[in-house]
Length: 119
Ligand SMILES: [Zn+2]
Image 1 (cartoon, rainbow, N blue to C red):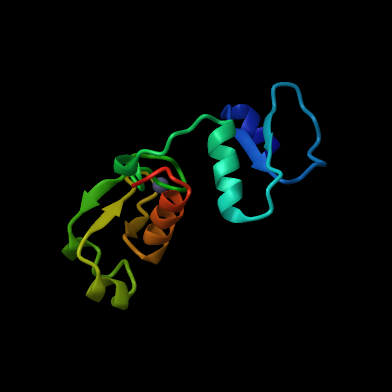
Image 2: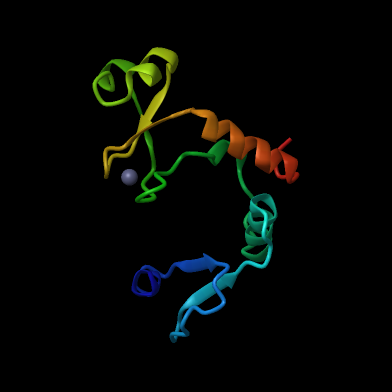
């Protein structure tokens, strides 16, 4: 994790006080114990203002911009229940993962609304 953070100029967000120090390593130490407070703490410390229109526009694994994919193209690539209940799908051009607006999507939006970032 430390090597990757240094190589990719990433910031490690952690509650681990015992992370070893390394030259150039950027660490944001989170003090809150509850998840919503942790999110607020990180957004404030990193001066990030979430953009409601940019939510879920990048792959959570490789950070590539996601692209719309037709429903018929995901038929055998997503669980049957998901295929039967969802209409819109997006995919990552790099890792080929497929995403849809599941409950996680709503939970994140609700949390950011609760924190006052979204209306
Ligand atoms: Zn990806």
